[in-house]
Amino acid sequence: MRKLFAVMILAGGMAFAADGAAIFKSKGCASCHQPNADTVGPSLKKIAKAYAGKEAELVKFLKGQAPAIVDPAKEAIMKAQLTMVKNLPEDQLKALAQYMLSFK
Ligand code: HEC
Image (cartoon, rainbow, N blue to C red; front, side, top):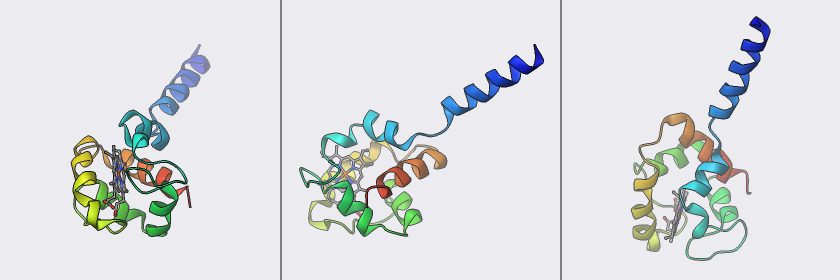
């Protein structure tokens, strides 16, 4: 019985681990950001290149605390989207940043 309980806690914990891909989809980011092609927003590949080795900077951008570096001319469109994510807990923002960085 004790063992079963431990397994249940473990499984539950995994379900709550931050999932960057799921956040990206559920917040509607995918409608403007494709993996390889620029559409309304730059591709994830382009974003990952610009932020290579700069995960902390990307998290800052997602919190609305850093300027755009990928396509500053269109920054206003993206800044409006940050209301969706900027108040997420740190671990979820990190997972989201890591997901985006995985496209380079
Ligand atoms: C309505 C279309 C649209 C949606 C939805 C959208 N974006 Fe963007 N995004 C843009 C545009 C346009 C740019 C280019 C301007 C810029 O670089 O900030 C951009 C740029 C970015 C950048 C690069 C920032 C930089 O430094 O230049 C990141 C990171 C990003 N988006 C993440 C996201 C995330 C995460 C979501 C979901 C919460 C999201 N986007 C939803 C249009 C969108």
